[in-house]
Length: 354
Image (cartoon, rainbow, N blue to C red; front, side):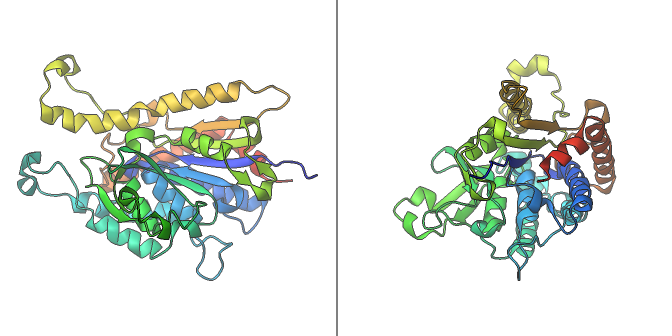
């Protein structure tokens, strides 16, 4: 009987244009591993990838196959970073809706038109379906029809769940007050009787899991990885790399007066609180799970996020101005230096199969 191989998992937080930070880390990881095993990409070194919002977009980029070869990645990790650096301004700053049209939020609280984002996703992914992605993955959203979390996964029964990747990414990035909810269609044939899962209205998965690591852990626990000879792996049979986007820098001004905040003030503040509030909690929970393992049978868990002292960029996760993009690129480099000083290279060596 073959020995079980540990399941290698990558999880990517949400965070808008701050996706530049994890994209910088992943670019280094791909280059490091490609030197060890020439011709490989991120999809070759991870068995499962999970992302929320901007992390969901990165997940899809890394797992998109070539048109003529479904076993090879279409995009290098460097192209994922370029996507944010080159297209971020068009997604956010150039898509901002004027205050006059929004009537200062009294008619619509949405800050940005989704048109540019939708066009970019269509150009990048075309009619690619989530079932065609190279490896099992999980991308989060919130289904307003069922009032519950919903997980787009690439290895579902396609007779019940089938979606265009572009619709999946539009859903996971529909952050309240930033973009309007995504209205998408489940194309599966055997779901027509459940309208709530056919014509879906979805929000950013960050409303419940901006750090999707625990969601990924639960999904992997119930997944059969045949090529790893590992069915429903436990924590000791996992390598988990979780990468954040340097959140938590937003300001709560005059919080001592919060008991008297207006409805508009709360509406502007809640998205940041909601999306950043669970990040550290999930990281703590994963550390606790990993801490239960015996020294002679360890799994592996590494969390990378930007140190507070290096968060010198705008707190607004939609600020894609040239100046802030430069700051985010520098923060990505600083975060990478921090990760390397804390054992990233050793962790990556553990991902390589003997």
